[in-house]
Length: 331
Image 1 (cartoon, rainbow, N blue to C red):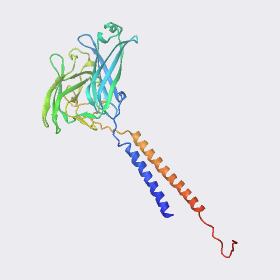
Image 2: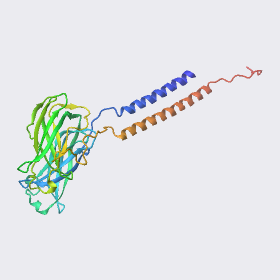
Image 3: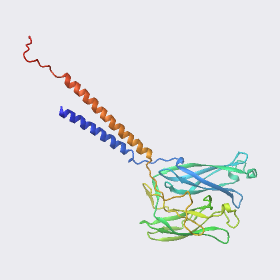
Image 4: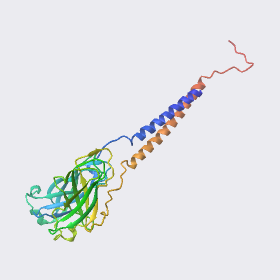
């Protein structure tokens, strides 16, 4: 009987251990999933360029738990009469957007994407732009994270162009190849007003470990000498991109960006904290695992009690009734 009870207890304990292992395994199995809902449009503004085209510039953020490869944003312009007038789309200026990281986009509305094949609808007056993330697929690849902005400063030149002059340092152990820099520009209230990048050609074909590199990047379109105060650039955010090395796995929190104002004092937009770590496992997953473990333990205990009751009943049915002393039974 002792061996039978011990066997049942061992099976119950093994069952509980198996449930715990399987439940905890839910948080350990690697998976990549992501949708356009994981990338949000934070803000946008508009202006007219020198050709009279409407330009919408804004910023997105990866609010999910996975790195996103290519992000595409679409937009529809509505006039004050509530009618849609033009559609366009474009890729966000980043590859491998890690969790909590931000990046700019630039959309141009011209006669080619207007419903009326001209820009006559501008006379009605603009009401708003309906922006949406069209593509944002998760990936396990991420940018080489060890290129850092060492120094930077902003200046308006004699043409009214806002330039950022900065230095990059390779603080890692690998050589970075084909480096480009994207800039997002903000006004004094942290609204996105412009963007720019260093061009289609890389600013350097390679940068060895411990090496440094100087560059300049200008804001597109906005002549700071003539724009209203709402479009005056006060801050900027720099994002470094490379073609190689591209790494695979869990990306570290974003740290290869910097933001300063035109007086070169280091500041951040009030809603920006690119160095905040992100836990890729949501609390709901831990709750599910805990519930699964509890139910597993309760189930094992009930199973053990049920088996013990059946075993006791079986043993009782097999006990032979012995005759009392002094009694005789007829054959």
